[in-house]
Length: 332
Ligand code: ZN
Ligand code: CO
Image (cartoon, rainbow, N blue to C red; front, side, top):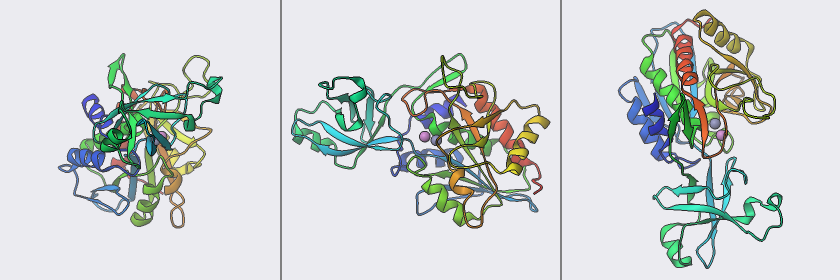
């Protein structure tokens, strides 16, 4: 899976600009599904038909990544930007970024600030090395979006790089599609858009597909680094089954289905309570009259930085668990 993850994590695709990553995912899955299409919101929906008598299951992973949208270009050619999703000051200072056309830049800040605490995104800018406004404008337009630019690397079973959130989830779904042998359930794999700006692709696709249940796959933070806030999730101890985040209380039956399947097949798992943030299931479970929903989370350190770090075994075990869940009969 390393190769697949490395490939997907390296493709450009901030919220609202998902075409490149959508094309890349489509190429991976097109020979392995019964049908696929892109909807109005840009979601890529891939269908795998069941043998009959099963449930309609929506599986979601978001394609989009956080980014920096250019709002202003000054006379010297420096670009001001607005956050597209959860861009923080701390994770941005002097980081390299790249635009869709391959232009790279560095995120700088107004160094006259008295203290680090005074730095806000409004005091930061992107330096693309332009000699002035004209040169900058010949390469970048207002509204263009940059993403963190950092190499993918691997050691000690850990994968590090940008956009693990949520290309790790996309890779997990792609691998699940390829691994599934037969299922009674009709499966709708949705690679969603605009999660990072408010779960928007998930919202419309859940409404259109009317699933019997929904499971989204996304990263979650961990409590396993020095003096981290206590949290019962660590890298390498298995995929996490969500109990709660700020967007959802997982449906007890979906949670039980996930835990029960993990136990039955001896797949390691952890239970996750995330005190802030949310993911696609937050929108899916509120669709129409409500959809029983849960989340399979991939533990990840340094979320929303250019060096998000996950464990290869959590990814593998996540695929195993999801395949077992989907191949079985779902009785509720
Ligand atoms: Zn995410
Ligand atoms: Co995110």
